[in-house]
Length: 70
Image (cartoon, rainbow, N blue to C red; front, side, top):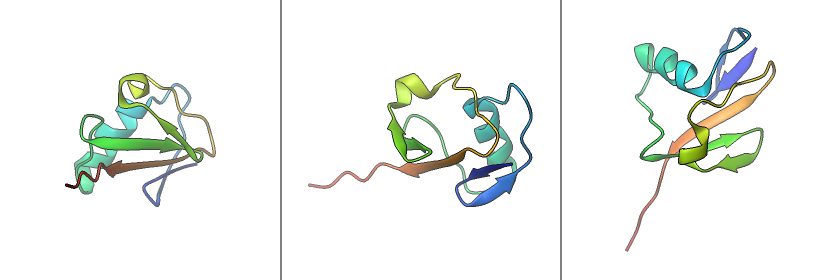
C-alpha cells in the first residue's frame, strides 16, 4: 500500500513516482513535479531528482504546490 497525498493506492512492484502521479491525476486534483515539492517518507526530494523514482511498499508520498511569496 502506498499513501499518496492522503489517499491509499495498491502497491505494484516497479511503480514509479511518475506513474503514481499519472494514476492520481486521473481522478483527483492535478499535481506535477514542476510546480510542486515532493516529500517521500518525510524527506524532501528535489523535483529534478524525483523523475523516475521507484516507490516502495508502505511509502508515504506528498506532492504539494510550492508557496512563493513576496
